[in-house]
Picture 1 (cartoon, helix red, strand yellow):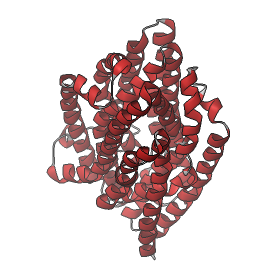
Picture 2 (tube, helix red, strand yellow):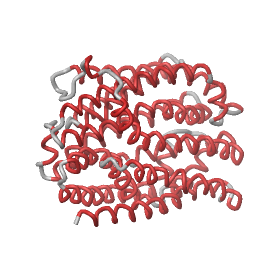
Picture 3 (tube, helix red, strand yellow):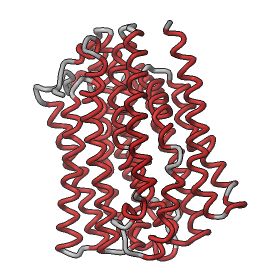
Length: 445
């Protein structure tokens, strides 16, 4: 699982490539999700369940702003992978320079807007009652770190695209480990409450950005930061935006979902229900880390071989990735179904939260064994540059199915309707993705 030249994405055995790309990606996601889990555990046990609700409100706002960097990173890395596959190193460096310039500009604009409209954003995302004050304390500090997070999210997919998955993994390990250590110092030892949690997060974002800068200035990177490439070129900016728009649209819909869901949950169950969802969302990310690792790891393999017109390897990569991811998803499903109470009790001792969360968790995870098709399929169309279809498939779960379902089902089933909306939306989105992916793979022949 060592780092290698991007050219080897077209020659090494597919199974080994998936392993070498996906394991570091999965470990990075694992540590990042563990970071969020531990953050929630510290906050829930040392500050209170309202603090979990406050972080649940703030996180979608944070990631909506940072998702501009993520969109530029993923959109540009798709182009970089295909450029290397076509032996066009000059284009790869031009694209990377445009990624840097675009990300820096947007991050600074969004930082200013965040400070100007801080309270309006919190109220929009559902910060009410006892949640508002801790959410305000947390958000005002975390805002400082968001430009660092955005630039980190721009650089990390590019590191993976140039065949350096170990470095991409380390880039994700650094902020996660830093945040866990700082949480302990600021929350437990220094008793700084929400501001302590916020400063731990902000400093960890800055450490991640520092590592990204070091990598691209080092001998390890095939892409270099050069003045001649640090300029806006409309041709490349447009292509990055086209593909990155998929990621941005996904996060935009996730944010819209958060707005609707937070208000709906508060109306049906108050701050307790928002806390329940906060725990479920952390478990969702943590539990699916191996599946998401494969979805991330397979993208540079697909992009390179598609760029080289090697469709036999493209087809083999898709099939093996879905197989591996489905096996892992099934293991996750069994664990959640058997141990939901034990899992939830780690986060809080609040009896109301403990009473509601296990059954809600089971309902949300009902379709987990099928989710690999959805994640791999939508990632494929993004990796090969088919932006429109990638956008449609990305929006299917949250936009086309989940949002309408959570607006309709609670009218008949109450709070249970909210939780049942998740597996129904997963099933519908997976069926649609499977149809388009099967049609695409027929064309390879």
